[in-house]
Image (cartoon, rainbow, N blue to C red):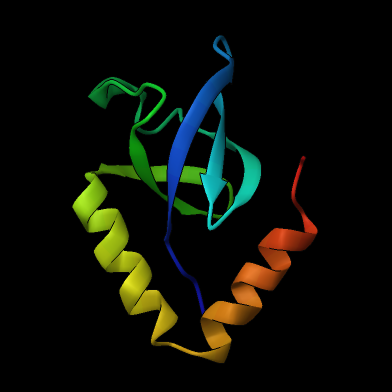
Amino acid sequence: MCLGIPGQILEIVDDPNSIAKVVVSGVKRHISIALVRPEGIAPGDWVLIHVGFAMSKINENEAHETMKALYTMGNIFSDELQMLQESQIE
């Protein structure tokens, strides 16, 4: 199953290559923000992430509502979070 998980932009770490550090459920990762760059993206913004790419910019309320929905999925989501935790950059 493919999940889009909300994450919050912490910083742009490689501006020319559109790479940002995000936090997803306490896990910090580098992701590509190239697809959402035209929408304007900055630290503090929320994005929906899939396989290392920000697919869309979302608001904070959408992010929290999506996380609530994902937690109701049980093992599917907890397995996804475990894989994310294992690949944490910090």
